[in-house]
Every structure is written in structure tokens, then in C-alpha cells.
Length: 116
Image (cartoon, helix red, strand yellow):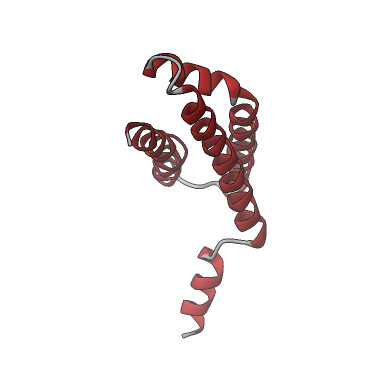
């Protein structure tokens, strides 16, 4: 029973990890909100492609902040991995999960919002 409790504590996210995830979510929401707002305003006056590019250009500041935060978090994870000496397989799994979370999900949700 004690070993199960130790495993749960070891695998539960720390407060710093939860705060970083919340910060990333907040930055992502601001970026997506900016893109949606600008796109909605631009859509009626120009073509769809031009509206999309205009929205991305207008929200570059938010995108840069979001990408910078992701890079900082990834650097911290890599530092932790080196310290902990995780195996190559574990690092590959973590990388795949981060790609899904940071690239696939935001892009697919943005594209879904754009097509609506």
C-alpha cells in the first residue's frame, strides 16, 4: 500500500508543472482568441486566405509569446530528463505527447474554428 502511495506521489504533477501548463493554456487561449477576433473582422472584406494571413500577422505577438513559453518549458523538461537520466524510449514517448499537445491539437482546433 505504501509503495502505491509513493508511486502516486512520484507521478503526480508538481505545482510548478501545473502552473506552467496553466500559463501555456492561457497564452494559447489568448493567441487563438486574437486570431478568431481578427479573422471574424476581416472575413467580410477580403478572401478567406487573405483573412487568415491577416489574422496570423495581426496576432504574431501572441504567437511569439506562446512559442517562447513552449520552448522554455521544453528546455526545462530536457534539463530535468538529463538530471533524471530517463531512457531513450521514455524521452521519445514524452516528445510524442508534447508534439500532440503543442502542435496537432492547437492547429486542428484553429482549423476547425476557421471552417465553422
